[in-house]
Amino acid sequence: MDIIQILQYSFIQKAFIAGSFVSIACSSLGLFLVLRKMSLIGDGLSHVSFGAIALGLFFGVYPMYVAVPVVVLASILILKISEKARVYSDAAIGIVSAVGIAGGVILASLSKGFNVDLFSYLFGNILAISTSEAVLSIILSAVVILVLAFFYWDLFSATFDEEYAKTTGIKTNFINTLLTALTAITVVLSVKVVGIMLVSALLILPAVTALQISKKFKTALLLGGVFSLASVICGIIISFILDLPPGATIVMLNAIFFALAFTYKKI
Amino acid sequence: MNSIVEIKNLSVSYGATKALDNISCDIKKGDFVGLVGPNGGGKTTLAKAILGLLPSASEKISLFSQVLGAFADYSKIGYLPQKHTGINPLFPATVAEVILLGVLSTKKWPKKIHQNDWRKVDGLCESLGLSNLKDKLISELSGGQQQKVMLARALVSEPELLILDEPSTALDPASREDFFARLEELNNQKKTTIILITHDTGYIGQYANKLLYIDRKLVFFGKIADFCQSGDIKSCFEKSGQHIIWHQHK
Image (cartoon, rainbow over all chains, first blue to last red; front, side):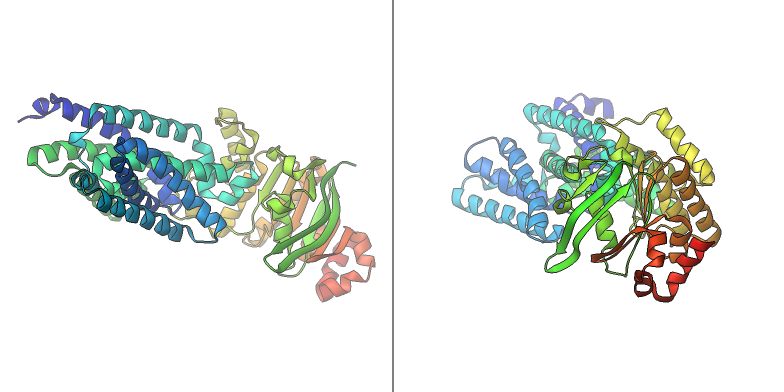
């Protein structure tokens, strides 16, 4: 089967388009998260999305509609816990993440009916993305990318030196909340692409790969997008041809890109 | 004369520890104030309070005759922080981009950078001898070079008030002379108000016209000439006070 034939399948087309938008949102956001040493927030929020998806399935509501607001709220909760309760942010992520998983497990145990659905979200399958999911992914990813573009310099300044950014009138608390809320939305969208277990890889790997070889922030942003997009497009094709799970294939391709960039830097 | 920074009965505590206790002073346009005191005496805390980094202090401070809580024109303030050791070596920011961050205080959302902003950056790079470094990564520079970049960042918005927290520590002697000559020029020609935190009493005597000495409480605020004639100079500086007196009589 050649590439042209593969591209004619509508489910492949949907996966390409939705995956492309999500991958660029992930890599753009991921660069800010990595540089702010907040990489693990993606991991924590993906665990919360497990609980939120379980909540949606439990009440018979479309899981993504429940997951987006619940995970956004959880992201704000992480910020508030680290600010108000004098807890380091990694510990705050750990608390909220554990509550998310525990909630999901309890709901799964209570329902006894949707375990198969719930566990399908653990590893995702972009090839099984529905039209409504693809449309939601495209719209929300576009929103994330546009917000990042409009707040580019505020984010750049607050990431480089938060205290100095405050002295130039940048509302850094708002910027931090915005960044975590955007991360929450992106995490939920990425669940369909690579699954709950691998979401953080889609946020972290393209960014750290780009940072290996970039000498400018904008170049890192661009290269991160290229690596992320290439991994999703190639991952979908390879997984289809070789009958491999697409999420894991995408993540492995990202890891290969990182290894290549690291080697290139060392040469 | 216009009041630039007015502080009334400011106290700041970190938990049970009082960092500042009932500080009051009025810094006027064109003042060059040496902010001095022992380690842990509250100098940096006072600078941060003036910059609005301590929200609890915002009602006790007025900037440009406006209560700090309501103050919004941050382009009038330039700040050079104490330490740059926290620069993230992974952050791929060039020297020009870092200097450009100082321009953001002049922008309203959505912040757009124009050619004119880059021209300002180029001009400052040229006058500070940073032109050949402007495309380099900030993390690749030496401590002294980074200090110059941070000074350029503080100056790029052409502020009316400059707050400098131990700015010359990483500079070599020649760069230090250039640095203070530039501050003097700004103070004399543009009437830029300067608050300089330093332990270097020689430079205070040479360039500052007012002294603000705090040791959690206000010990002295006024003209350096008055300070030299008071008994405070001996108790505050012991032998190093001679540097101030020497420069005053030069």
